[in-house]
Length: 120
Image (cartoon, rainbow, N blue to C red; front, side, top):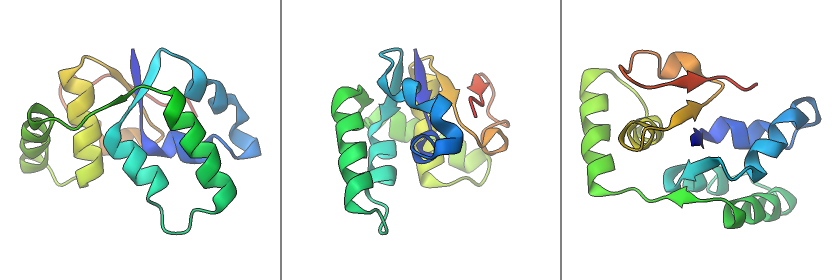
């Protein structure tokens, strides 16, 4: 199983990144609930994009932000400055033994045991 970072969702609808769209429909790829918040919560999201992402997230498995995930995210943030969203996605990947697919490999490269792939 693989978990997708928010940036993969953001790039996928763009014509230059059409090769990412199948990942959003592949049952081997999942998301964190925090990614759903990051993508759908963007303040400049237009209605067409909102509808697209809502459809994608309805079809995709989204893992909840549990107490264990939060505890791991705290450890990650204490070790090195990182955003709340990144720490939760990374913690979710670590605790569930998931490969993290992200364009921003450098944001996560310091995390021991985290398998990273840049599908872009």
